[in-house]
Image (cartoon, rainbow, N blue to C red; front, side, top):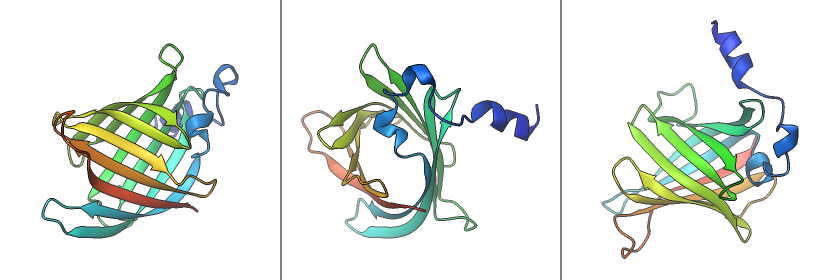
Length: 167
């Protein structure tokens, strides 16, 4: 199979008709975004890097996939990962599967609406509890906050923030 055949089979023009209503939680993200990333380092310093994000319909419109890249291309990447988001009516939530093969960083979460925000909770490949939140959502911007902790009794610690604007 050629690359173009693979991409044609993967990509979809929109949500599948039978799931269109359920896809709205993340469907507004479809398109291209630029972001500014704040990395809250363990030593208390904060790194600031630009990046880009691309969201699209995949798997006959039954899922949403994204690509997160830091810094923006054509600079050499320090993060190049993808998320697959699939709605599951049985749990009234989304399965979130993150993979960054460059950094060997993997997470599995469940995502749901909480008020005006989208909150995803799960674990990463290090065994850390993770919480990723889309906040301050508008049609053209959002603030994404990544947090982690080792156990349920520990406080959440912010590790990353992404401030995104639609391109």
